[in-house]
Every structure is written in C-alpha cells, then in structure tokens.
Length: 310
Image (cartoon, rainbow, N blue to C red):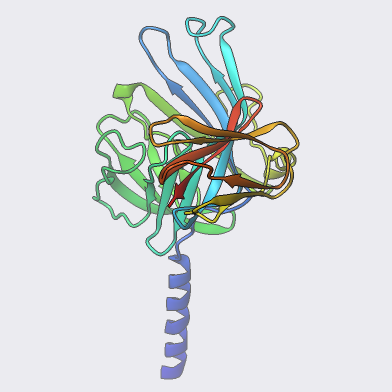
C-alpha cells in the first residue's frame, strides 16, 4: 500500500512540476496582430494597426535575438498629412531575446541599441512592475495570477493594476502583453490605448478581440506573410574585426539594397550596394571604435546592428 501511495505522490509531483513549467515566447512562426491609439486634445489622436512577425535570428553582443518585422498602417489626422494616411509594409520593428532560466524577455527597439527588459514572469502577487520594464510609465502592481489554456498549454497570466489604467492589463507566458507585443502598458494620463487582437503560431491562431477596431481586421497566420520575407538571416563576422568583415545573407537581394555604416556621432562613413549573399566590407582608414550599421531597401531600413573595430 505504501508503494502505491509513493507512486501516486511521485506522479502528482511530476504533473505539478510539468504544469508549472515556464513557457517562453516562440522563436519562430509567431505573429502578433494589434492596434493602438494615442489621444491628443489638439488633433484628435492617431491610430495604428499592425502585424508584428518573426523573421529569423541574429547575434547581438554575443547573444541570440529574434528579429521582428511589422506590416500594417498608421491612420493620422489630416492636420499631419494631406491625405490623412501613410503606411508601412515591411519594416524592422526590433529584436527580442528569451532568458528562459530567469523567465525574462529582453527587447531592442529598431530605433535604438539599448537592451530593455520587456517581460518578467518571476513576479508574485503584490509585486511592483520593475522601473526598467519597457512601456512601464507608471507604477503597476500584480494583483492576481491565474492560468489560461492556449494552444494546448496552461500558461500563467499576470493581472496588473494601476491607478491610471482605464482597461485591464495582463501579460501571458509565451505571448506577452494583452496590450500588444512590446506595446506601452495602458495609462490614461498619457492618452495611450493598445490591444492585442490576436496571436498566431504557424497557422494556429487565438483571437483576443472578437470585434476588432478596424473593419476587415483579421489574424494573419504565418504562412500568409512568410513568402514576402526579405531574408531568413543576416550575419556579420567577425565582430569585433580588424581589417574587414563579411555580411552574410541567406540569399542574394531581390531588390536594390545598401549597407550603410555610421560612427558614434551618427555620421555616415560608408555606403555600399549589396548585390550578393556574401559581401566583404573593408575597414579602409576608419579609426577604432563602435559603429552602427543598417541595411536599406526601397528607402526603408530593414535591419540594424552594431559592429566594433579594434
């Protein structure tokens, strides 16, 4: 009888540990469909909807980051634009990294090189959102933790409360914020609103908002956009380098592409057209230091990074 009890207890602990297993953000095939609105008493506000999707990985500071791109549109009041609208079709959004050991997610914005804390899934009820959390503009507190079943997995959901919030906030393991991936947490005083309409992995999707703000808004499966991806991988090696480095793409560019290099003061010091999958970039007479590079296609920046000359 004691042996049977021991077996049952062992099985219970096994399944208990399995249920508590941390679920990281997927590193391939994920798409976040989201919208946001920023109010302004002078112009009536601006609205945006976008798909954020993963496109391969890259190495930044010796660590693997997943590259994120965006498609969608910005709707802007005619005060700002004669025709009232402008759009983005395939632009670099940023990079994220899973720290599965510490149950954290880090983010680098496309317009910056600073590594930011995006999500922390170690929090307990009563904890305060860390001050360095990306998008945390005011003090938010974890007031509840439960689980939600999505894509066949039980994921922890952290409910956040703030004196400035005018709609529920939460983050979900393996997905991110219900306000949108790498979106600002809701704060009424800043007039910012965001919503994750749906999330998909490969061709499986979950809809968070049954009534999307924008007519015709649908959750895009990954297969709907993967044929339009630019390249699966961009690698610069060696980094740091002394005389030259190699820019390696997964395939030759199918449109006019330029490699641009900037010094620490933001001055462009090199610009070369990229026509093959592998290109050698020579240092020439540039001094030692940190430089920032970007790839440009059709007047859009599709990739950024940092390289060190020593």
